[in-house]
Image (cartoon, rainbow, N blue to C red):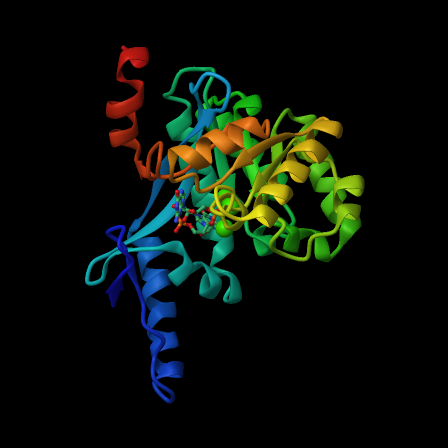
Length: 275
Ligand code: C2E
Ligand code: CA
Ligand code: CA
Ligand code: CA
């Protein structure tokens, strides 16, 4: 495994022929990992562009593998989706994130990523309602992030679920906007509260005219439709200032903080408020 520079390890692509065996090994490892409680959530602060206060945190899963160290989600989420294990993993994520956020001050939200496979699972709303009830978290403090891939299949079912969630007070964000099978039709047909502008556009705002135009247009579009915007992957002060000038609502990125374990988040950002 090689390090990705953030203390996490990425698996190398297995050599041809070893692939099937390595996949079966990983699959068994994943199942064991879930049973053994090897998954953990790290949380990345989301800050308000206006004033710089923290508005909430995005929960991001990691796998504390006994032999491989801390494994990044891109190394195991795709396989977990393929074999359906994303459903129990995703349910654990929802319960864990709600339980953790219920310890935080009331004005802070928690955002959870929901994979398309999990979103289409019947009973998602019940799982979320159960997690809210068990934790006592106010539904208005929960956000779910879905990507455009959710919208490709079963549009009526998707619409029903989105309406159910929003009726509970949960906010819905479109993640990675502009990178998938984007269509403006989706924004017209599906009720989103928030658009997350992908890092690929944000990282270009300081030196790429096209990126800047896209960020500007998406921010204006969202404003016009009554949605907020979050710029992802803000790494420099110049990016932050450009993003602020374009009127995005919120920002997240390494400039503010990497994702951190809950205890570290509480120690660094919440200890004064929580006391
Ligand atoms: P995402 O939802 O788009 O999450 C943002 C990713 O960007 C995270 O990577 C985060 O650590 C990283 N990031 C944040 N700020 C910066 C920055 O300033 N620069 C750079 N270069 N990167 C930054 P991570 O944690 O490795 O997650 C990757 C993807 O895995 C996520 O992308 C999401 O699609 C998926 N994922 C993570 N947690 C979960 C989960 O609990 N459930 C599901 N279904 N998917 C998850
Ligand atoms: Ca996300
Ligand atoms: Ca994203
Ligand atoms: Ca992404």
